[in-house]
Image (cartoon, rainbow, N blue to C red):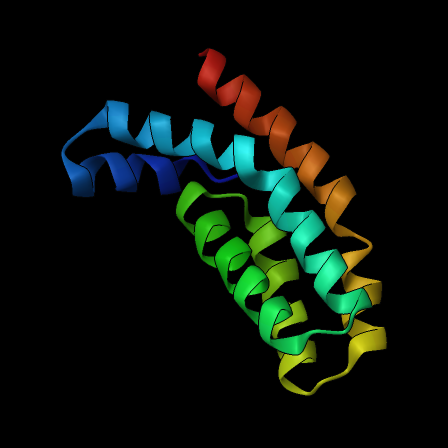
Length: 112
């Protein structure tokens, strides 16, 4: 799920539509790395790195409007806080499919 109003708000707040567009493009470029970092940290398990990577995904996804990824990251964050690696790994396994949907939505948005 994608909310284009998040990028509209970012453009308004920054008073720069090009900045919001560049932020979305940068987000797309880093998304797979962010997910790989979460997955790797959870399999270590390295809860400090997992928390850092998860918060990065949550905040950036909220800013861009990729709500599904933001919600998954929030759930993973709670699992990591409880040091529940199996639950966090299970949720993290849903990230690649959600990322594909986010990539498609952002590609369509940026093409407009």
